[in-house]
Image (cartoon, rainbow, N blue to C red):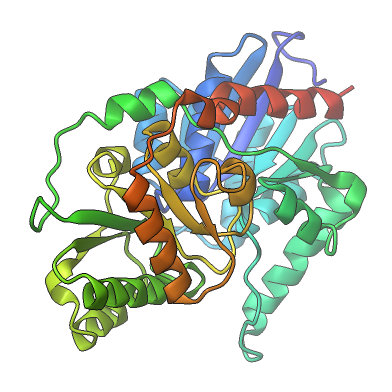
Length: 372
């Protein structure tokens, strides 16, 4: 451990983008909140963008510093981050995405007593256009850092961990499932919000970035089939924004389901909206371990999901939701109708393994192991 004014405490520095309020940011928030109240931990968070994550960390008295990547080139970012690291003198630098992985790795190369950890929050996107040499170089450098410099790679699900073993050294990979602050989620769910549309309809929702892997197009196909089979019975809510938003709105219009489909945009108080719906759908081609699934379980809401990532384990197969094993919209429709018919509500046992305290304890074990 580095020499500092408290030789017993572990000094942990997280570096993350912070530009979004999505799965990785939500998970980091819950983890940082738990670490910050842990004896023997001194925590600092560095973000490359201001935003919701910054505000929430500050509201919980967490030491957070922003280096706005929109104002600086990469090497200036590196210099500023190096200065922060030199002042804080962390035992562990914990990174959360490509650029942060590279920044953290470049720093620890010259700090032999500082260890480096990354969390991989979801399956890596591939299939970049051949002409995007810049993105291919970043991707290659990120892999190099993971294999040659960083000490541990955390996967948020067993499935993701197995995939990462094809890319990185298996001995470096540890699985730590995500966790949430159940009390905070339940408190947030009591905020007053209003959903558009008739109150007497069954309310289905998808909550995600509007990007290809989330397959919101399948969600719209599901709504079309439901509206054809049982007109005026269902309302659909799409929470999130992203590059596909305009195209998906146009698709809903073309499919004649605009009367029952509501694009809600980006919301920071998702638990309050989750509390108003009847069922959460996850139609992604692949996932790590979605935070909105854990939040839904904490609120006793049924989940119907593609059987990917950590979701089969979270749902104990079909005990706490319905798993769909194909991307055929009709399979989702069948699962929805069966689920609504029994109107399930889950007890606290469903979410108990996925608390921020459990998540924190596993990360602390990794940190301590690395600095022995």
